[in-house]
Image (cartoon, rainbow, N blue to C red; front, side, top):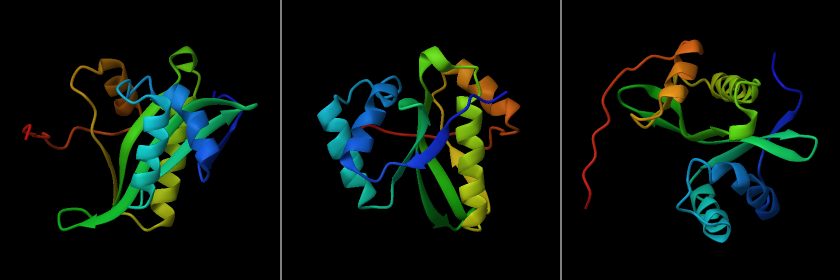
Length: 143
């Protein structure tokens, strides 16, 4: 059963700042000021940051963007999806992912994509329960 709360898109620096306490659990290399600044830069390129608010407390965050590719057509890409470690298995992540899928459908996206670190086994189990599947390998090279 999902935890009671509301989901909104952070539209002010203050809202983004409130999200840092949860986002840093996934992105610990960003201190609060660096996080707010980077989100602001990315927002200018279409990035959006949604947050699950439970009585004034941020319990989960999801960073996402819309774009179109030759291989998938219109799509939503989820850059970041994290639930406060003290709130896991209480429905917050599921509520966020369902909310994201609804926004993607509203925008006529053909697919929702995300990457997950190979070591994040608990996250993978969660994605499988949400009917997601592994569709490709993601390769990178340090430059």
